Amino acid sequence: MKSHDLTPSKLRERLYWWAQRYLSFRLRSQKEVVDYLTQKANKYLPDRDNQELVGDIIHQLVDETAIDDWKFVDWWVGERMYFKPRSKKLLTIELLQKGVKRDLIDQYFNENTIDDVASAKIIARKKLSKLGPKKTIEFLQRKGFGFHISKEVVEEIEKNDYNTF
Image (cartoon, rainbow, N blue to C red; front, side, top):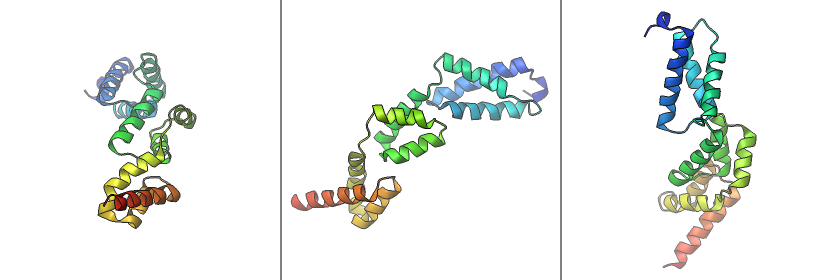
């Protein structure tokens, strides 16, 4: 459909459909959906300020609970911790990049504890034999763990592995 064929009401219908489709693949933060819809709206009606139109659709999706940043944070943290464990610090950075508000992230982590030591152990066990202790500590630091946690975890795993022989 060409941009001159779209009236604001037709664009609204189309944007709503695009939003539903975009949300069907995985959970998204509100900012991700706003950015996506703004890009689509500006593509089809570039000469118009589409913020109000996008805002109306976002409010509708929030009312329908299609967009819920709390559910998104819970899902994001769960997926990350299952597939690629990382520190609470790095998870916070990722969520901020996704547009989730800092107070919501803080509230989530106050109610749901993330054990950085356990996460670091999972990663270190996989990497220690390939990388060695020094590089494993550096790797853990790049995953957002502090030096002391990284060092303790690597030393503990080395000690336990040494005692098993």
